Image (cartoon, rainbow, N blue to C red; front, side, top):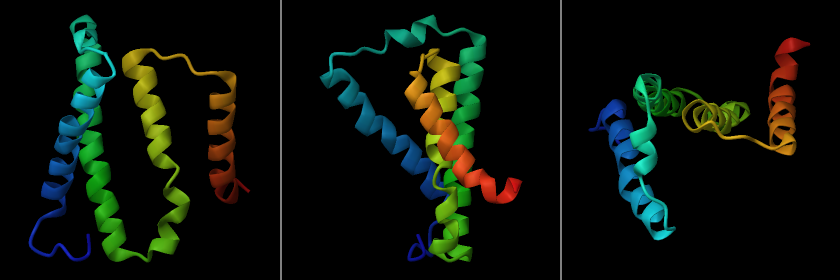
Length: 119
């Protein structure tokens, strides 16, 4: 992102998130899934979708700003935030049940990364 001097980071982030639709919708249809799950959403689910969409654009923008302002080696400890955000999204929107191994692995990952600040 350091080479993209003419585009605002927010514009790039928004287009990146929108491009996910062009990639994942065909994959969903190829796998035999459909989009009828969206018909079952209530108001809270749609509010979560709007919030998560805005959060994704903000997270991408903040990531680009961090890459521009800090060395990449200093940002490596924060890479675990993407799977944590995805897990929260899956729990809130789709009521997915995770296995004990997935939850314990995620808690271990969080513990490893947060332990320097907690001790």
